[in-house]
Amino acid sequence: MYLTPTRKAIYEYIKNYILQHEIAPSYEEIRKRFGFHSTHSVHRHIQQLEIQGLIQRPAGGRKRALQIVGHTAGLVGRSTSSQNAGAQAVTLPLLGTVAAGRPIDAIVNTETIDVPDELIGRGEHFALRVKGDSMIDDGICDGDVLIINQQFAAENGQTVIALINNEATVKRFFRRGTRVELRPSNPSMKSIFVKADELRVQGIVVGLLRKFQRG
Image (cartoon, rainbow, N blue to C red; front, side, top):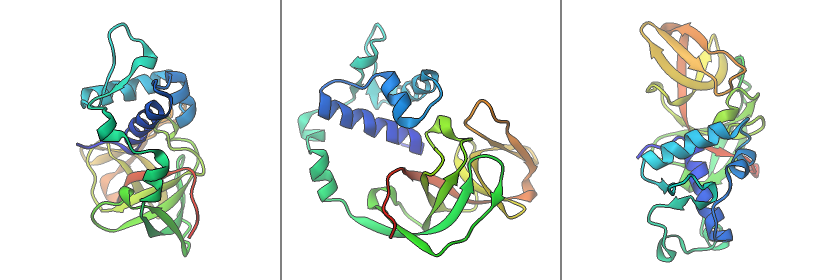
């Protein structure tokens, strides 16, 4: 089942919150945690998680009564500390900065960063630090570190790292015939439209770190 990085993070946040507090977080708490402008964005993500069968909203719309589907003590009973104790780290190259706004020159570094291995799937991966807030409604904020699965093609709706005239940006990808729309997740910003042959996809965003330790 495909989950966007933001949706996966929201799901994990709700699950861990219920484990710790025995009640679901409010929509406002989720909004603040992920930096959304309004609870409308929270509602949209919650609705999609429900459609995908991961959470359940009770009748009547009680927002603190969200339930994790299949939530039992045996399934998710490990504490956060024990989960962290068993976590393995993978060292990735932190290649530089990518714009969550207008494209900016990619800054190539030789830094590395240690990330949880659960964020890494098949293929080659690298990390980029975000500058700007055009993707804030997807929970991607200025200063975050994105984990990228390196690939050179994308499907509609995926969040990509793209190069336009050697300038890098992070946006949602939509093919429009011979053109490509790079759509921000910020209602105050407009999409970027370019010819398909003027754009090079460099990878797909598969994870996000807000608190991290450099390698």
